Structures are given as C-alpha cells and as structure tokens.
Image 1 (tube, rainbow, N blue to C red):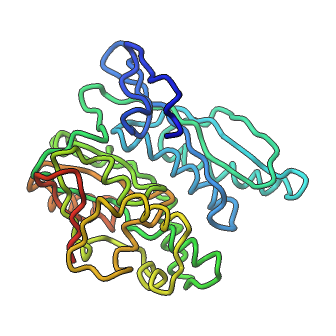
Image 2 (image 1 turned 135 degrees about the vertical axis):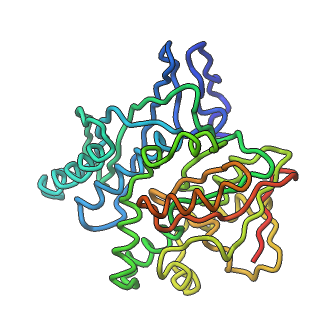
Length: 321
C-alpha cells in the first residue's frame, strides 16, 4: 500500500483524515463547527476551457458537500503549458472555476500555478459543517435505502467524446451533469438531513469502489442494475467498447466483492466506470428513499434514484438485474 510508511495522523482536533477513506479532512473548530478541507484537480475532459474549469471546480467542491458541509473558501491549483497554449485559455479555465465557487456561496481567494506539459486544474477547498450532523462515509445501517443523485457514465461519454463518437445532445447532457454542483444541503429539510446516515461522492473508483468504501464487514449492498441512472448514450457506447482504462482497473480491483446474479458479461460496465464529478451516494433511513428521490428531482437533481438497499452480510455488493 502506497501510504503504509506514512504515520497515521493523530491530533485531538483532527476528526477525520485519510485512514478511514473519508472524502475530506475534518478539523474541530472548538465550538459547534468543524472545518472541512479538501483538494482535487484533473486533466481536461472537454475542449472548451470555461466548461472544463466549471467541471474541475464542481469535482473539487463535491467533497465538502459529501460531508454535509458548505463551501467558504477556495484556492486555484493550476498546471499549464505556457509556451504551447495561449494564456487566454488559462483565463477562461479560471473563469469557469470561479463561477462554480461563487455558485456554491464561496470565495476564490487566489492559488498557485506551475508550468507543465499537460494542463491540470482544480481547487483546494475549505468549508465548514455542524459537528452534530457530519455525513461520514461509514455510518450506514442495515435496512437503509441507498440513493444516487447523478447519472453514471461520465467516463464512458468522455471516452466517446475523445473518439468523436458521441451524439452532440449526449455530450451536452454529460457536460451539464459534470458541471452541476452536489450541493443538496440547502434543499433538504431538517428531517431529511437527519435521515442521512452515510454519504460519499462517486469519482475515479467508480460506483463499485465507492460503495465498497461505505460498507462495513457485516453489511451487504443489494443493487438493482435496472435502477442505475445512466447518461443518455452511456450504455450504448459501453456496448461498443468505448470504455476508459480506469474502468478495467476498477473491475480488476473490485469484482471479487461484487456478486452478480443473472448479469451477462459487460452489462455491469456502469458499475466500474470512473466518474468525473459524479453524484452523491446517500444511505438514508429505511423507507425514506422514495420521498427523498421525489424531493431531489423537484429541486435540481432530475436523475436522482433509489438504487438499492443495505442488508446484513459480509461487505459485498449483490448485483441483480
């Protein structure tokens, strides 16, 4: 393991670090609040620099939202080939990123850049969360409903975009999804907030990897393949072999803990597809899923869906048609 020689972080005010797979570090601010600190940056997924800036920023901000927090402050992280590309392009990237920080209610206060052969962009983000209602990655309960707030398939669609094999309408919907913020807290009632037992966002390890991070050793996740929300064209592109390399790595890493019942080879590609700025996975009180999904769909998350439930087991995903 890459981190095996690093010391496990210990401090009385550090509420979470990397050792439990949490989405961000939590720092006790000494009253009712905890600070949420995270960073993320990515390589280009679309040609338009403004849209890429928006997507990269939404991707980085997501970790704060996944812990039930609100964004306060962000700093740019920039790698850019200044001798190969016009600086106007970098300006557009930064404008796109700033637009999403402002939409989240935060302030973009600067950043740092280095020259690099390949453009990379993202954010370091600081936010805060009420200590009494932190959403951790683990905390789900047997019987919980599991909700996904965005459709799967961004890795597949981005691969199709790069191969120039995607329909324009499918491309636009995928971009809109990746650029959309996972800021669900402002639209939830106090009762709904209290019903959330665990949360994480779906990114590079695919839905399989992030679900398995949520599971304890005495719980299974029953997942219905037919209920997985997918971007238009994602399933069709996957059937044509337009899969990113990360999907194969994710399958190799996680398939031993996925028990597929009556699923033909390739039908489960969405489960392993690495997401850029994917949705939130929410584990909510048993029976609360339908009302949650209806509410989210009415408040800007049209693809929200209850995808399965938590049952007693041994820490695996049980995939059904």
